[in-house]
Image 1 (cartoon, protein in one colour):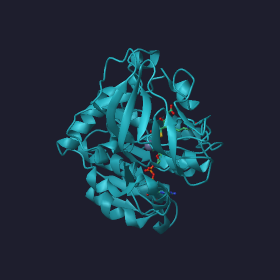
Image 2 (image 1 turned 90 degrees about the vertical axis):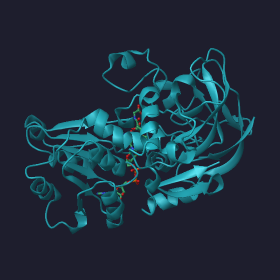
Image 3 (image 1 turned 135 degrees about the vertical axis):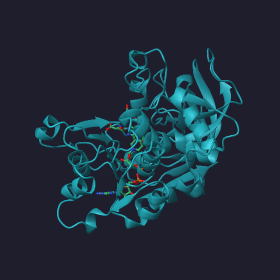
Length: 369
Ligand code: NAD
Ligand code: AHE
Ligand code: ZN
């Protein structure tokens, strides 16, 4: 079938709106009509050329929601008409990783996801007879996409696509990093670096679990008002701090943060996030994604003296199990998504979403089809 997609032809160039050929679902796959997709900083990261796994030409996008329109042979868990959120972190419930109960990083299809193809090693998308790469196994910048059955979470039908698409990445990543990865406890003091689409969800997760001080750090002071609405108790602009930021944050938290979260993708900030943690027990969670060749550094003494460095992908959430619950939380008013969706655009204007992000003007832009 012919579908309408935004194609990343090469790194660093705007996306091109094209009519693309999409093959139907094969064994274990489903065809989904995408109704809405968010634009995450990771899409911009890959488009920039900094992603070691970045492949071109490709159909990017990993924060979608839509409706199953057709299922391939042997699909049992979803049927046409079901509402779903595509999962870049699938959940097969059978691989060593899923069965370990120690991680959400299902590896059933990770290798082919990274190579931009479906599990059988081929692409379903093509343009002018040439294959296009899939992205993160999701490719939501298209009004139809094909996904493995294990990479969709079935959600309730009354949830609005143009809001819950954000649960496909940003909301789950931020809230999940607090509750599943760090397991922040009531009364904890927390520092959140980067108050964008991820950091604000970390902040609302911290408020949900009853954290005490929730300190937000961002070089853009325009982020302060919304962050306060989501639960931030103190704002720090590193540019306005005299002297080093780390001792300033240690003083503000009376000895160091119990938890910190890096939501930017800056390796120097990752070091600050670790070093502002409390001696003996502070845990720093890296969420931000850094480009090819970048490395983190600290004195080993920071770890010897009890600080812990962790990472979190998709908030540690198990997609098919946890995503439907997070959709319920939104529908029950337990989490706020509406105020984070600052812009809505049609697919034809998707490049504006990247401009708004780079200019620091948006939190999330959602494209509706
Ligand atoms: P965003 O662009 O919306 O937000 C980034 C924020 O960081 C902005 O508010 C910006 O002003 C601030 N910032 C930039 N440099 C700073 C600095 N030196 N000090 C303080 N603040 C600074 O991005 P986002 O969508 O929130 O994504 C954040 C990061 O998380 C990206 O690296 C993205 O790729 C990554 N990410 C990771 C996962 C995961 O599963 N680990 C999921 C989604 C996104
Ligand atoms: N391809 C990059 C890494 C990108 C990355 O870390 N992706 C996160 C999700 S970001 C969503 O916005 C993730 O899930 N990572 C775990 C995984 O298996 O990819 C690189 O550096 O090669
Ligand atoms: Zn994302």
